[in-house]
Length: 306
Length: 306
Image 1 (cartoon, rainbow over the protein chains, first blue to last red):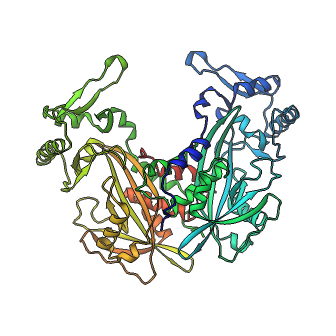
Image 2 (image 1 turned 30 degrees about the horizontal axis):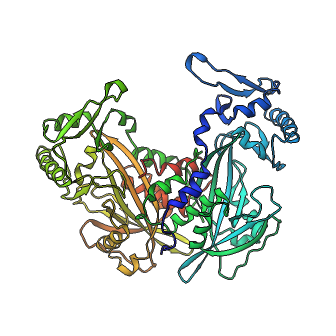
Image 3 (image 1 turned 45 degrees about the horizontal axis):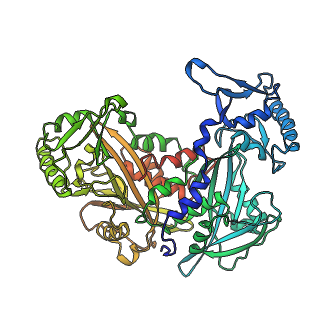
């Protein structure tokens, strides 16, 4: 087992982990976004400048200055007090912000706002707006692998050039957003068919094998993401085919080649590379004797893990 | 996939994770043990009372009180300045402490003192003394599993009643200490033969699949342990046999049964249970929809990870 082409772990840090978790030192300058006593997210002071005019919805509580709460926190106006009302009012504001180009890559996808995967839904919000509020976001990724002559190969995809995000770059075989609290396996089976034409009876064999996480401050945005990882061993004669237009084509690559790809800046979708690294660790392709093994393994969960 | 018998993750927290990491709130009352500017470990003030009489070796530096270093730190006397000299002098003291019953479970095994697995060796110290100095300690555990009719079964062992530690309780199939910087796979192959009569050609197929860690303050001791995890799929007709007297017998159990065992206080060796939990996560037997999935998965690495 193992792959001699994965010689040094340094490039995984430089190209993947550090960039997935870039800008975390700026987290302290973000303003907490609180509701019902819980921190739902974090808002950049410059984004706050763009939304504070909506004073019937957003409200800046300076906090108790005697106990040093710093920037205080942003919350919703007390009159905006039901799940449905919050969702509707905020959606109206976000559409305005999108028109002004203050929010880009609109997805037309309402996401529940939670503090943990199985937690209470406070309201729902357009997916493109999640990072502007620093709200937790969940995804599913599936490693499709083939074992031939005792060696593992990974199916990877090239994202369509028409995608709004990361167009044309390499990605894992099946990738999807996941609604908090939703049934991950069902969603995975459905997406495996849509993305890679994997029949249901095959996708059912996908094995849940953990999670990766990261936390990223990038300009006005804060991404706090958790990705559930699945493995599916595919028969050598299976050929994937994209059904929903999201994927340009698929390629079956050796693990040495995928390791090189994820370490080449700009080639592989960054957060997806964490999932590849997790696969390499779990399947014995990175060895305890390699300098920095334990810290790198640990770094795959750099986000807040809920 | 998956096992309906693993219904709630609560008992994993209550019986395993919280107990593996018991007493961490007391860490701040331990005194750092520093050498050459690095923190090698942590010493309980009551253990310090027992060793401070050896003033030619151990030295309490109060630190710079202006910058609030609290308890200061314990270090070695400047005259005790070579690796060999430190090892010899400390060994003499430890043997005296063992005679006085201040150190128990003497193993006759010198362990390198490091701050990370691939780091500089400051000196060596008897294994039984590691937790009294809060020095990092490494181990290897192998999950031996059998797949029959699409279901996984784990080989578990019962520790010999003559073992100095955890006599008579259940444990993973192959368990060994690991010298920092040493070749884990070689050691695993050697121990797989000694512990479970697994032939070399079979043990070579064991797959490195990550690590677990914990940090425990228990009376005067602090354990800061990292365990490298390996999986080996065994053929259904393989029967393990112990060669070195450490193991009473082996049992092949369903994952539901091993999950129950690790959740029954006193049945399963505590740190070994973390390795079982890691196996359950990686092989799809714990599901993302189970409440607390992400935090529990993350908790398998609660130690400091170097």
